[in-house]
Image (cartoon, rainbow over all chains, first blue to last red; front, side, top):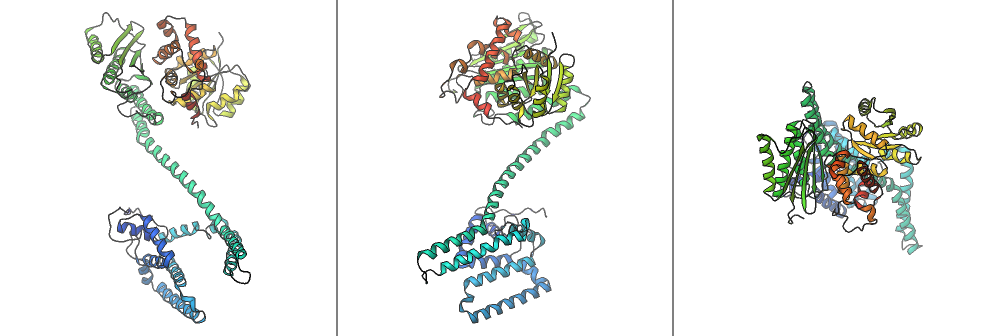
Length: 420
Length: 217
């Protein structure tokens, strides 16, 4: 297989030169190529060709000519050129053409209607088939073999053996022929409705016998194909994710093997990334970047990454984050960073809850704690900045701490009614 | 006090090895299994007092083990253990009868504490499970407003129960909760048990939705 990137049809944009499509091909890729050339939908081209074929047979002739005379995309020579270039196939071509003409001429002598449009079309179609088969590249021939295997009557041949196919095809053909015969007698000796019904019935049964297995496998293939496609898309998605993040992190961990703190940090950040990917709510209407939950998850990620502490995050409810909630979260972030720096434990619990009238955020550690009445200047500053941030927006700050029992910062802010 | 007889069900050998070494000396590990059917057989045969049950298991998940064992009315209690953050996973094992839920990154001593508590008949709520429950029982949660409460006793949490759950979600241990609310430890435990009962019996939309929307592998 060549790694060849093919031109795609672009609506309204004609693309020269005209080449038969390699990827979008049912038979020869003529329709796909026409669609690219004139900048229309391939499906529209197919419908037009089908209609023209049914009405006049001209579609078939046109298709056959284009198939033979147009190179495939990426090729330089058409099938006709391939055929004429090698002497033996050219000879076969001229020979069989001559024989066909003679046969048609003889038939014409005996029965006058032998060379009408239908016969003509069928002959051209057959000739094209033979020519393509001889002149096509191995690649295209392979494609045609697949088409053949999937086609109605012959399809099962490769799978079930010719005998099974013959058992089905022969009765089918007989039924169809008998049905047509009976139908053609309408108005004859027996006349009237009976032959019409009987003939039509037999004809339908015959067609059903011929077509049913193909139709059934087609339906089955379709749903199987759809399922397989979904599965492979999922697998590709997963593989990309595992490769992009998990494998990279594992490599980093290997490299940082003698730095336990770094290993823990890497493992945690990877764990969080994977969790977000696996379990993040996909149906939450407000889970964009400005939602309360999302911002808290970001807080968790940042603090865990920068301070080597585990943040146990629990959030109940969600809402759009306005200015006061942003201030609340900024204060909560400082409180968590504070816990990471001073508490001496490796876990801080962050609990956020959206209630009807207010939003609350609790940041708690079970570390060394401090005496709230006698804090040193540096901590005093932090406490102040937390308090100021939240109080500016009408919120409340409550800091509980006891030496030896840990610290809890309780933050809350009233909810604005514009965001119910 | 005799050590609880613990049975491990987890399909990952590494996790089982980690659990064994974390529990060594503190509890009596009587067996382990990595799939639903052998797990059920061995639990029925050995009748452990506590089963540490992975939520995700090949062959039906932890829920399948719970359902199969519970038809036999053993005294065995279940503590669910998972890495999953999905509420539907957690809620469905708890509704199927697990007495508690902890995440796999729990520390050794905390896990041992949880096992002893489940063995004594208490309920173990992780902060995350408390969060899920508060979410599910939230008064104004979407989808519940038009659904009439079928049984108000079961479909609502009392203010006290909500307080207790909030404190669990904030990272408080039971003892700290009893200190914070100035109530006896036994009272805290009975509140949590009552929440568990509501969680298992209530038909609130959110719970049913989570419990049905399972995706075990």
